[in-house]
Length: 246
Image (cartoon, rainbow, N blue to C red):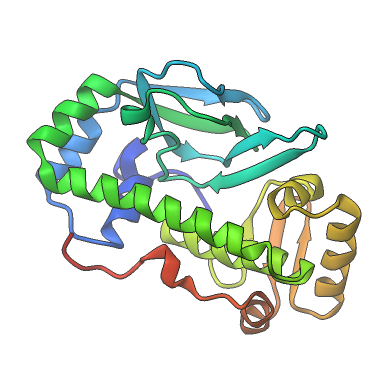
């Protein structure tokens, strides 16, 4: 699967927004017009630090990026995983800083949108403003679901993360129901699911031996999607993928 898109750097964002509403050509042009620069980041690069002043928001074009925080015991907790088409810090337009760190989980390409240009665009295109607001609300819904997932079993937590990422990557053409690239380590999975690496390794082995899902070398192969969703108790409603006027 390729990251190339006929709409260029805003292509994944347009794909995501089109799942929830229609976009006019004028609105697509307006989205393209907010991009001032594109930057490439190495794996494990810091994109934004806590409490630093923000003058731009960043759109993920390719790769994976995490929101994370360091706990008092020195462990890292991954708070969210972003996929192409996600704005990493759109809420920084109003908050002006983040209370957590943003770090790449793979080599990544990001497009920068200066806040003055974003403010002008949202003022001139109220429908786009609503759609971007909607996307931040979906991010919040994902955060709530991640919190709820802490009540699941270890297998349920890992299965739920795989189910969610499969759908979110499928929206932007980077997954199907059988497989997708996921350039994470087992330590990343542990930090995203509040499990130990040993527990993650043991759980992945059980899921693999059951023919449900196999994760190795940065790749997820799904043997039985229905079984994976049953283990996760997965209901995709919180992703709000239905298209309707906003």
